[in-house]
Image 1 (tube, rainbow, N blue to C red):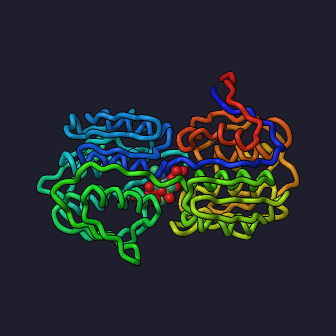
Image 2: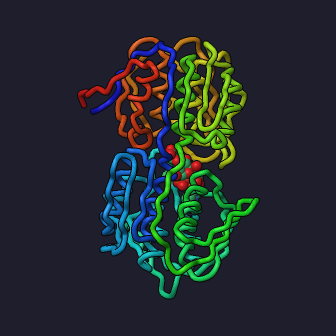
Image 3: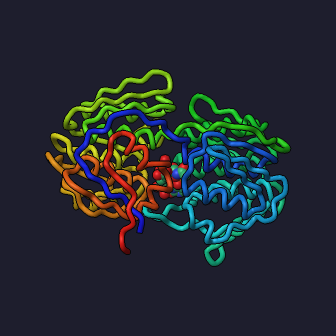
Length: 420
Ligand code: EPZ
């Protein structure tokens, strides 16, 4: 099994260019189903992006990838069914549902199933689509969606600002009849990037001050060229890599405003952060200060995806840190593996208490999920001695060139084949 061998104990320094956002490119790839030809720029090379392209090709699109651009031609679709093996390749493939229904008037997708973070329900997606005229029947693990009449606009109030549900509603609403209003939508930058793509493609979308989204259906969308925003979570992860090793790192091609809930957290740890234009620099203290209380929240609050990278920093803090994970029910799986490296972590439901130690020691650890796996690498970079990190397929879902970038910052690590 492929993994990383890491020799820890070195400060990271230098600069890294941050890749395009996984969580922006995935819904926008689904949106390309609504137009004829679209080209996306700044697309990251990730296994989740590969999975999304596989779904598009299965549906009958032609997908051409050149460096970090992806061109999708969706003039004629051959299918509106996404089989289980493709749905299971990527948990968030449910975001294709709204676009397939909008384009084909029906869809048959395998239930996305759960993932390492918990059951990942899609009740908010389905109840919204039903309000728009979709009939959903669940049968043997598949969702059979039909539209007996026409997709029609509806006023939808989300009980939770679900990112995926907001995206599915937006994709179904662009060519529906009449107006769709989404109250309490997700407000992540990735939602705005999707809205920008759709507006460029001719959709009639308005997002007002309080976040409510108004979409008036149009007949059809046209293909466009769109540059995907930078990945704010990858950026946060590299900032944490500098913070946990006492380093000095410059990130290029980021949007500082997308990190405004991350900066104060790392400044609380004693890091000094400056940003000019699209570059952010973090200079870390030798040993971080603890985090009084990190609560994960929907955007613009502290993002759940940055919780585990920041937890890696807290393991070496000069004191005790408190985490409250409000978004997912099972997002501390990295704690057990961090404890194998000497971390002192107590998890009680949504709460994790991390008592900082002066040193971590290298160990063999297993990635549990995407961001948890990244946090193990960060801890290994700061630990004394060698670590072996396996099951890095989780990391390759969401970080392009993760090892190459860390090595360019001075990390001693390499990809290694471990016996199964
Ligand atoms: C998106 O997942 C991201 N994935 C996640 O990033 C991110 O952690 C999450 O939003 C929150 O920001 C992509 O964009 C591809 P949600 P999504 O719907 O859309 C509950 C990463 O590491 N919920 O906002 O699945 C759900 O169970 C990934 O890059 C319902 O109860 O997140 C969860 O507790 C991980 N019913 C909470 O809402 C529903 O119908 C947040 O889910 C939908 C969601």
